[in-house]
Image 1 (tube, rainbow, N blue to C red):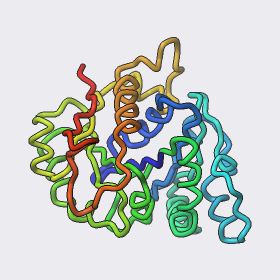
Image 2: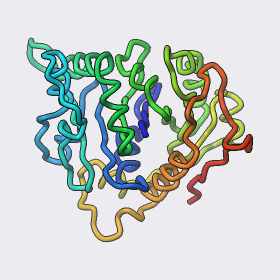
Image 3: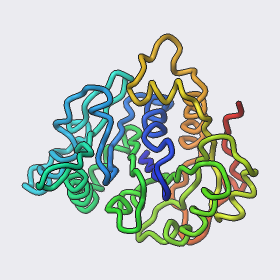
Image 4: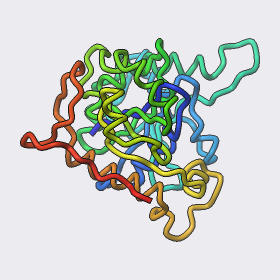
Length: 273
């Protein structure tokens, strides 16, 4: 399954959620792909070698020597999963900065490697971290190719409004395979039904504010015993199971879907603190 996660204002828990979903995916071997135009952070956070990664995949594609396995461009991190790292986010020097390198690599991968991503996703979960989806982000094409397109948002009226004013952009991406669905970070200040009604998009789960899990997922703290049972990781597990069970084969992008198998309403398991 190919899962893409992004946000439209800031990037609340996008990278943490991508990593947590891969860690807690029901079947082993899940990969994370960093496709944030602002640059990747995970290699630095976990002290991992960046190469081979997204830049090498783009370079091989440009040179016509791309391999047949996305896993060949992934490197392990200490949480038990592997990541296709994007270039780091750097903002100094006269040369093209890493954000520019990341944008170029993402554009190349989105244009030429969707078949490679989808082939890998037929064998394992591939979780793509899109970062913040600006209007001109090169990552929109990767969102369109995904079996599941998740939009992470903070709870609160301002966050709901930010999604609502961008819903037409979110639902009209050319070639979109699956209508965007929302994941709310933090305790919602209004009901899921109210959020869905305003935004026109289903809420498929919530994840709690969890400082301990955030530190572990960002490489700032050692996992320790039982770390996969932290509240954020438990919420990610419930979401991963729901996505695997209820993933649509195709949902028209122009019409938000709230219907699951056999015409029954889709009520995804939602973490409750």
